[in-house]
Length: 75
Image (cartoon, rainbow, N blue to C red; front, side, top):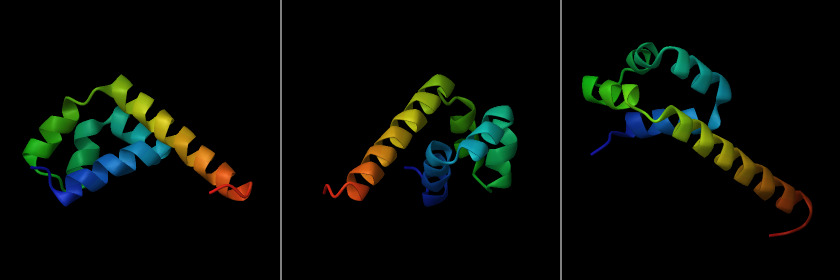
């Protein structure tokens, strides 16, 4: 079972490119600074980096499409 802190950390990785870059440069340090447990830190060390980047890109594209749709009177 994941903690709210861990889930929040992951969500931030997906939406905050500067945070993601810092994390990818120092996963343990960022997880430790976030106060995550040793188990959560271990899970983050093993994260699929390419998968993280692909997911972040996909979410960004969806956010842009949603924002564009709302501005164009759709939805």
